[in-house]
Length: 173
Image (tube, rainbow, N blue to C red; front, side, top):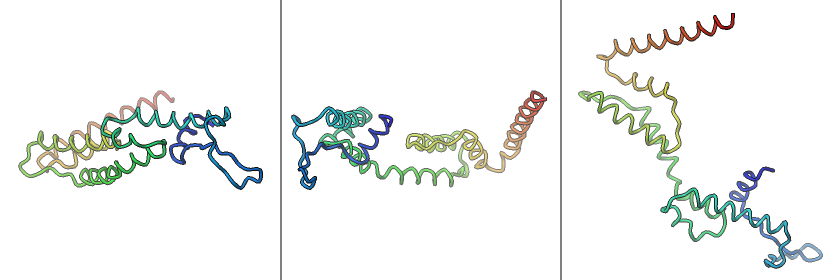
């Protein structure tokens, strides 16, 4: 198994805790460090490595939230709890983008600034939106007075795609 997968298992499932079993296998107690085998040591080290990866990937604000956590799993749960609202915020921003309209008497520059702000916030939340989708959305919210320009842009795009398709066909012949 790849090490990354093993570390992720530790983050999700918790660390390996070396244990002693009695002869019948019924009573178990945690091993002391002196009783660790080489395999136990390697398994325990993976929790430290997972913790290190998580800690190195966060900022000061989040570090204060997780500084008392003893396992990678505890750190992960604390981070999930701290960022639980992120999904709700992202969905809200997606809704804002879907409902985005240019306001009456709004300058194109101001509308573009509002649009860019929403896109940047979505990007910071990990939402990737293709340039094509963004351009289509922006062109779709322009007022009727912009129809001739919008049509010209779509026609130019259509001609460009035909030109590319024509080149592909001629290259395949």
